[in-house]
Length: 355
Ligand SMILES: Cc1cc2nc3c(=O)[nH]c(=O)nc-3n(C[C@H](O)[C@H](O)[C@H](O)COP(=O)(O)O)c2cc1C
Image (tube, rainbow, N blue to C red):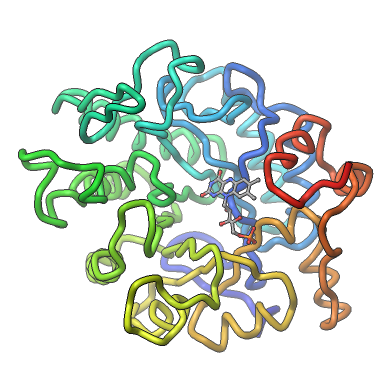
């Protein structure tokens, strides 16, 4: 099953059930242009067997940047790098995708040169609430980002609707306290995401693949609402897949009487032809198998893919293959295609790099 192809409503099949998680890696140039280091790191994963190879979160407008060295998908000068990457990933036989992002509250002024903006204001970051005009400008930026990705040759995009960034800030009742048509009920708070999806579907071709990443809990998202939104997205039938970012696929939900794991809860919901990918501590071939048994269509790997660029290929030849235990040396990560900048970034993840 792990090595059988997966069809989508639009675009090419995934040749297997492994997706490379979107992974911020700090390797792009200051203007969001792809660097050779980032190309190299991603190409090693596409060639290592990741059937869907996703870029890191890429900002869709200059002031939507959340991290230094972040990839951009909003300016013509970024097209050459994006096109080269799409060509490379496609040639490796993988499905290529760009994760589209805006950080909202989490766009530091030191990076963007302006105060952050979000659904509502935020005292801590001094973020301002967006005017209707700005909301429409950002929706347009997401749609243009998808058009750019398609023009550059990518098979699709994923909208980053998880982890407390802008789309998630609109979805959450904690960070969206608006009283106009963009706030209040879940349907109103979802409008921002829905208009982006509608616009992308209207303005990209029939083979363009569109996915959304969601958080099922935390980041101000109540589990019940995450389920309701998931069901609405399935009914609307515009998406190729939903990527549930679970952080631990086998964990049970916090503060809920439901004894099933998050994966079982979402895996059991009817989803017609929309596919379900799940991410969170999937580190062995047995884990991948278990994800599929419990209802997912594909498994998304982050840290295991950082540790081993060719995890899927190794898994195919050795079902017992398990990733190196942590921490690992900087030399190991360099062999796996991480530049010194990315290795330095990984030092922020406790217990990952050994010094
Ligand atoms: C270094 C690093 C960077 C990440 N960057 C992103 C990102 O750009 N977009 C995103 O949606 N998630 C991001 N994540 C979350 C991963 O995509 C993934 O969901 C998470 O790491 C859980 O999978 P894992 O346990 O296999 O690492 C990042 C995680 C790590 C470790």
